Image 1 (cartoon, chains in turn red, blue):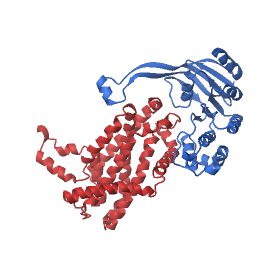
Image 2 (cartoon, chains in turn green, red):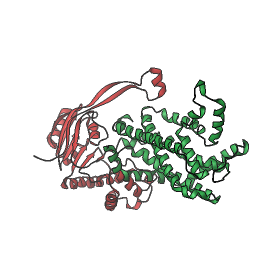
Image 3 (cartoon, each protein chain N blue to C red):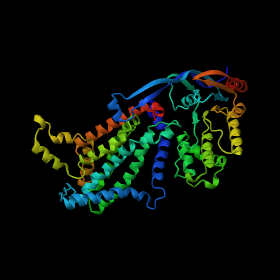
Length: 279
Length: 243
């Protein structure tokens, strides 16, 4: 595990690169870090207008929190998703975009996707803090004991997302098409994850269809293969319902995060020596 | 027996020359293969020994493989076969200011660039004044680097790199940076380096400078070491072969 040792020795570099991302991003803007709230806010307004007002989708009721508010239901799933999609969407390019650095200086290359994830994580923490304050303002005090757990699962999602970013950033060196494929895949992925709607709607449709093509497999079983389904369920349970997430979702999330992180790490350990000449 | 700082043992480096490089999915599918290439051996069995506390130069024509060797020494490329041994820490200076963030100030970039080059925060704190002093940009320390003149940019980058103080420093054609005064300062700094028992490996086309700076020079041609010896003799040999 000498590569892990190298990574540990490079943690100051990791901190500095993360700071570079954060500080460099909103330089010379009047609102600065507040801009990171603008995108989620715009999305919440648009989706709430379309789905809650126009389509009149029923707001799921939080159990036991008793919350009944589409915008909050949405945002509890939307913020984790936006974090995930930013990490993957920007992560796929992280090696190619830093080719100048890679070709001139030696350092463990894996710090690039990790520092990108950390910088985006920082913005996400900011967004989540605003959400928690908003929820408390609406008197969802049942949330308070779950705040530490929210943080734990945020880290777990970050591990999953950075693992995928590592894998895709390396593949993107070989196939530059991947960047475009990822942006399209993320659109499908967004609608195939229960963010705008409760998963119960899919369950109903799935039960109507029954076993697919004469097998026991139902639509919902395929639907649940999506790791983000588990992550979104966990964050909703904690934030919107104010209860412990179910064990199945937690285990699925842990397994996916572990697979992504190990695969990403392994790929970097194997490929990083060749990156400079491949770029 | 002198103590060796760097030992290069029979290093070969292969590059693939692509006739068609299919980095997109479409071409990979259409042509049913990912690439067509031939192998090019940029280094063909290079062996070198660099004694501790000496300055070793690499000279040769463009495309002779000296830059590839330097990049192997800097751990940017990895030899296809053969090995390189280091005794002590190594830092490289192949391009000044790589990794600068243009929107950040000189001060922030000193920390960022220092850590990219392998310095700890404490070491940077300790060296900070020296770095600023050496680069001569005190007045502009809190300005974003993008407003720097190219000379200031290069001086800051060079100054950070030289203050990493590794046991072994690998330097590409960067001695020609800055004005005459800065060059003199840089050469003095290299001399100081040597006195401290540090080892420098340097590539340059400026023969007069190389003669002054180096103890030993290796002449590289077509991926092989043609000769290694005292700087003046090797340069004479090399120049003799050119005419």
